[in-house]
Image (tube, rainbow, N blue to C red; front, side, top):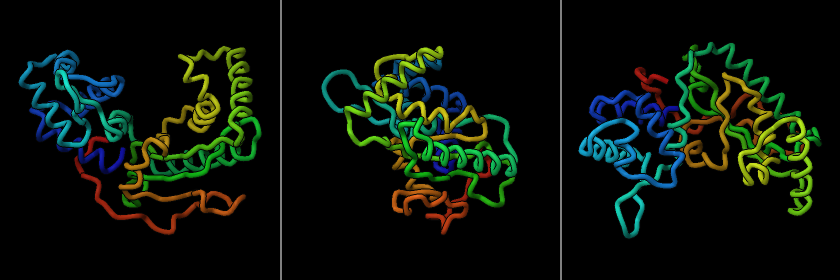
Amino acid sequence: MLDAVCQRGRSYQSKSRGHPVLQVRNLVRKLNNRLYWDTKAVQAVLGMGPREATGLVSTLEASGLAKIRRGTGPKTWTTTPLAQSFGSVSAAKPITRKTAETALARLLERIERVNRDNHFLAKVTRVIVFGSYLRGDVNRLGDVDVAVELEPKVNHRLRLRELNYRRVAESESKGHRFSGMLDREMWWQLETFRFLKSRSRSISLHDYGTKRQLVDEVPHRILMSPRAKSGQRLAKESPKLVRKARRPRDCPF
């Protein structure tokens, strides 16, 4: 998916006692759904013994994918923001650069529509491309990693909530099922995010608000930012990349 995650994958191949990267990725995905966990949880997911689970947890912690919870009681850990990215890594069939460019162009068109269409309660204020797409010498890509930042179009909190619940009612009348109150409260944002994604297998869409640290630390291309003038079209070329980094040749993603 991106250089930092691929490097984590390489470390697992050499340090996790032979556990395949995809197996560890699936473990991280399940741990991401827990507020905290212990070595017994790792044992249950991977079917390993206590000693092996302890060693794997140490590897997760050393790689920045897990951090220990401070406090009293039994030792437990939580996953980190980087673990969220590692868990979302795709092992799907690679796509050509031409397919990736077409998918990105269509995403930018959807972003422009979101910002001008009053149906959407959110607006896109930042668009950043990162990952292997930025390497011009690579023609086969896993997907196109794009981080977007969304802000409400309505500044008044109560008015936004009122409009949001109108949209919730409309969506429910069309058959959409909400998993809980949080999904309803955040529908103004989630609905827009779903439209931008549009089930595209070539686009890996990320929330910049939750992935800010990771995105800012890897080479990236800013296509849109709050500093741009109002009404300015999305940039098609980047002024420069933040820094250069090589993607490992043996990266499976």
